[in-house]
Length: 137
Image 1 (spheres, rainbow, N blue to C red):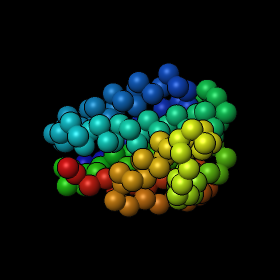
Image 2: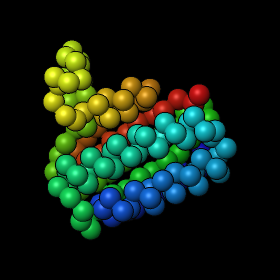
Image 3: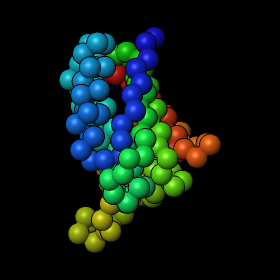
Image 4: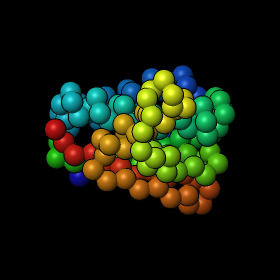
């Protein structure tokens, strides 16, 4: 199983590079459109939340993304140096109110969590470490 890793700056403008990185991974493994779209949504949510909420805006802090797997299962590792934050803790709250009455935020991570067959979070050596496995379509 081949693994592909890249480092990006925690800047919203880097999101395009993240997408390109994912596009190369998907093309190399012939993952198919559905798998790539799911992975794109997950990475976009993790990355934008890291920049906007973790770092409170664009900065030059590193963000690492590692991808591995094939059509059956894709493994995603996302690491950043923002303050400790488990992106799935808030997503565990069941949405019980109408969209108009609920607070803003959290739905993207809830969706990303639902797309992953398994997920894990740890804060290790000053890094938020998110691990996900997405099963192929």
